[in-house]
Image (cartoon, rainbow, N blue to C red; front, side, top):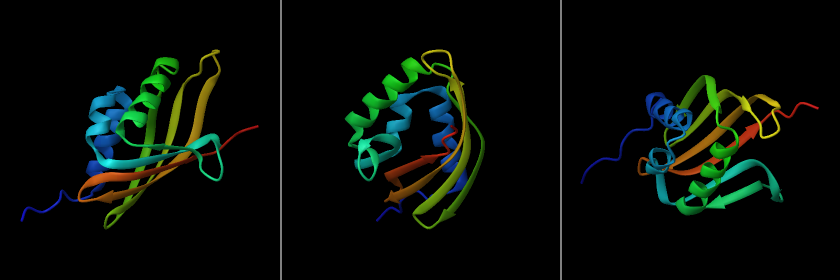
Length: 127
């Protein structure tokens, strides 16, 4: 029996790098077939927006990167606890109407068999 790839800070950095390249196919390669992404904002109580499956996650990412073309995650820090992990980051970019995006946030990650099963995203909202 082969072992699942270990969840490490380096793995999380690889995933962040794929996000920074806006490489949706590479991002999705880290996700399990049955996966979910709970976004920081959206209409679905209590989650915000809950995306289920690679197809929906890919759709959302492609739409986001088409609007925020310079979106980048910087100042990342990662902690791993078995198949769960936490990442802190700062995301920056330019919104659709030219507004500057500069938010602090974090992701709670859950892996299963070395693949990303759940990504739960939070960020600070500045009024």
